[in-house]
Length: 239
Image (cartoon, rainbow, N blue to C red; front, side, top):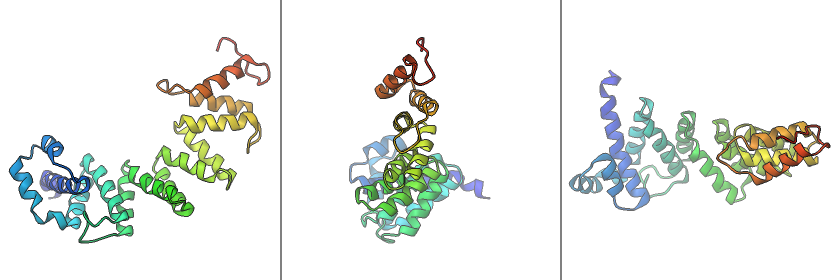
């Protein structure tokens, strides 16, 4: 039965993960030895093994561990998907660059809550000024809840398709991005690319200030002005 082997699969995945991190970071294994209690002899043996060239085994073990509930492997599958997509020879030299496989792995990890690799690929396309690919990968990451990608989409569409930009400013602001909430509130306050709407301006300034750990000067000052003034229909000097 599958469950009979679950712990063995997880341990095997850790061995392959160790090799993947060693190769990717090109640095000593002290960090991983501390976490997984692997001694020097084991590390030396692993370093000389055929794992150094078998990317398929690394991927298979991590995916298997993820699918039976190993949460640590979700991150590793996403990481390996990103590496597979961009195709560095030093890790996946037996399979090389494989964008289809890499995308599948990143999406599988994203479905389980780890969207950073999709966002990272999107960022690389942002830097390259590849609009279509940047939109594609940001939309994938945003689909699974990545707020940074929602913000990226708002910025990408701003001035290109303002209706689309407002859609993403709104989604990001509603999802906790204080910068997007503030930007959207200022737009509603000033009438920039949207109709003036003081109620929505106040709503999004308040959303921008919802996280007490973030001190947002712009939102604070604008919301204070709205409460002090008779102009906006929400005067409340106590606030």
